Length: 153
Image (cartoon, rainbow, N blue to C red):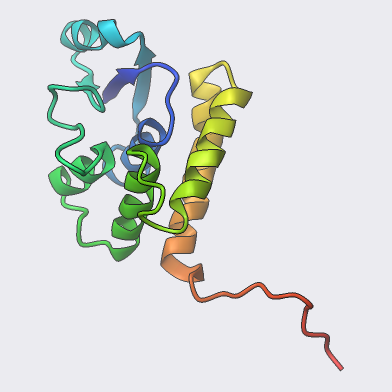
């Protein structure tokens, strides 16, 4: 399937393709276009628009597009995805105090966007970032990193 949103993706527009590719569509194609062209190109191509006002898969109230995908595709019961959603929501809606991780996600997302002029190249790296965040949400939250390290005797 084709999925379409605004060019120069950050945060939610990288998180949603990650969710699509990992849980919804085995062979997704992502289109990034100027904001004013999203709906027209979606109509012409049949691509599913997301993260723009007035479409089904977008921000609703305090929730972001990632939340809309979780609800629509029956993924809301996955605790790790719910934790990710809170982190993403904080970063994407300028509520950086929503979770301790939201500020870090915001900073890394803006850095990725700055590093890559090509949206698809940036997405490739962003997918790895969200794989790591999902792994942390699933398995790594209890891990501590302290200094000085405990030295074996």
